Each structure stands twice: as C-alpha cells, then as structure tokens.
Length: 447
Image (cartoon, rainbow, N blue to C red; front, side, top):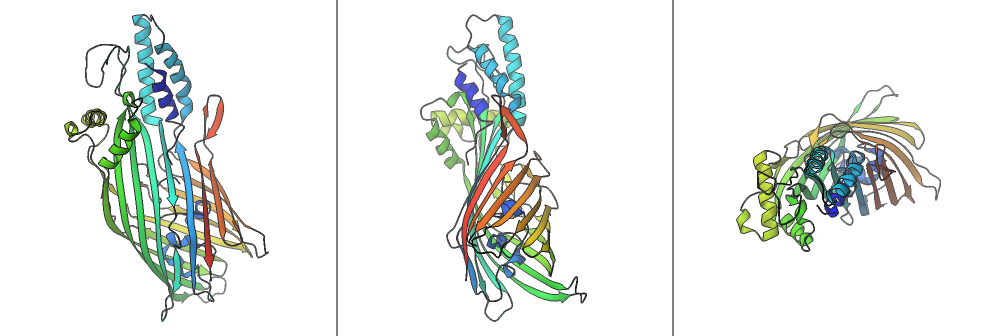
C-alpha cells in the first residue's frame, strides 16, 4: 500500500482545518481567558449572561460598540503518540517485496489493531470566530432603566475522525474488505468529516430590578436580562475513503460533497440571566437555549447511484458504515438547554478573580461532549499606556477532559489579544506538542 495512505492517517491526528466547539453560550475574545463571567470592562460579556448588557455601560455612557469583536482560531487533535511510530513501521513493511504469507498475516493483524485504536482515539478538530463589524452594540433605552444589546457573530466548526475497516490480501470482496487492481493491500478505512457553520443574530434587554440587603457588606442590586437569538446553522457530514484521497480531483470532491450534504436550518433560541452585583463581588446564573432548538444534518449514504464516480464511491462507503452501525445516515443536533453559574470577587482596586462552571454536560454540533469549568484573574489598570492583563485556566469536564492555560491583554482600552495552550501533550517524531492551542484578536470602543 502506498506510504501516502499512512502519512495521511498519521497527519490526520496532528492537523486541523480551522475555540473548542460552540460553548453553552458564545465565549468570544477575552472570555476565552476569563471564562463565562460577565465583566463590565469587557463588551464581549454581552454574548454570555443576558443580564450583562446593563453592566458594560457606565452611567455617563450612551452607547458602546465593537469595531471588530473577535477573530479567532483554535485547534485540537487526538493523542498521536500511540500511532505514528507504529504506522511508520507498518508502512515500511507493507512496501516490502517478496514478503511471506506469515509475514503478511502478521503485518495485517498488527495494522488492523492500530486502525481500530485510531478510530477510537484519533481525530482533529478546529473552530473559527469571524467578526461582524460594529457588533455587539449596547444602547441606553430611552424612558427605561435598562440597556438594549444588538449582537451578531459567525462561527465555523469542523471535526475529522477515522472510520476503521480491515486490511486484507485476499482477492475476494467481503463486507468492507476488498482487493483492487494489482495492489497487495486494500481497505475501505475512511475519514469522517462533520462541519457546522453558524450565523447568530440576537437582541437582548437587561435592567436592575431591586435592591437587596441593607448590610453594607452584602448590599447590591439584582439585574435581570433576556435575549432572543436567531440561529442559521448549516450542518454537513461526509465519508471520504482513504483510497480516494490521492485522486487529483479529491479537493473538488470534498468541497462538492460538503455542499451537497449540507442542511441549513433557521431556528430561534431564548436565553435568560440574572446577576447579583454587590460592591466587592458578583454572582450570576445563565440559562441558555431554554427552548432547545433542533437542526438537521444532511444525510449520507443515500441516492448513491445519482452521484459522480468519486462521490458515488464515498457514498457507498458511507452506506456500508451506516449498515454496520458506526455512523447514522440521518442525524439531528439539539442545542441543549444549559445552565452556567458564575462569580467574581474584587480583591483590590482593579484586581479581581473569577470562576464559572456549566452545571451539566451537553453535545456540540459535531457530537463531542462538553462541560466547561474556568478560573481566571484580571488586573485592570488606570495608568495611561499600561495594558490590562488577564490569565486563566479552563477545563472540559466531559469528553476528552482536556484543559488549557490562557492569557491575554487589552491595549488602550481598545485592542484585545488572547491566547490559549493545552496542558495535555502528545509526542510526534520525538517532539512534544500541546493537544490544543488558539488565539483571538478584537477591537472595541465606548462613548
């Protein structure tokens, strides 16, 4: 079998197409470091707790908006150290001439075990934030004590994994085991790619509703808010046989199949939030996607005979995997209701520590389990030309249970830059790499 096949399988573990999935709410920019915590200094808070729209405008401000809210990319990949050396060795064995039947059987047995493990642990995924100019924007609502928030954002999410099928040297076709042309080894092992393209438009309102407690240490205000979201979500998935990847037109086939298989659904979602704001601390609760909107994926493994040759082969491979129960032909993604608890304490002027946690697990659009927990600290300076600093720790309590350390700064009260690096690492060709990394950049302005 050609070495390119093995290079692709190894490379699929350490490559990415494009933040770590759609969060329970949409954490942009500085909140990749700060977590799901509303902060008056960060305009991007309005995408989190709907009550935060009242926090981000000072009493002497009439409006606040972003030039470009955030542009960001983030990457995550599976643990490659268990596979790359074994795949390289097997690639050399399979390229040898005049191997004995016993050697071939032993090599195939080893490789099929590796392929099965690869299907369980090997994946690559990436997300991208694309900014909508001038949004979010926050306005004082004339004649009311509250503020209106208008927001929009777009996000991309892709994940690639492996669907395993055995290698064989026989010339007969049984299930997914086939010998093609004059090659000694063949397999229908495939890449399984799922993608999501999201455009979200939202309008929210927030205001203080009452004062609580007379004790000075705890005296504060209860702020409540609500938000209506309109989601336009395109979901697509496709199966690409490893054997087809060396075709000259494979990039066109991938793009065409992605577009043909995409299903676009428009739905609405409702979020509510509450914040108790005291002099030295605040606590909050957000309930997102109360109505749990549903979105359909485009089907795979259907109408295969109506497709072009390469797409047809991929379609029939998908049908085989559907019949084996490895994947579903038709799939619906439910944007689950999620509650998130948050809190922060101001230790001294300008310095605060924060924490947040999703109160349950949920699935992102590509089927990965998510439950975020974060801890962070930030220092907001009053010295001209001195940047604001922040650092944090973020962990997914579900799924792969990966974690990141995060750091960022704000220059001139306008430019935000944030970066994250995974704490879990994997080894490839003797070098160690973090399994996650990403960045976010953005500009905002207040009046």
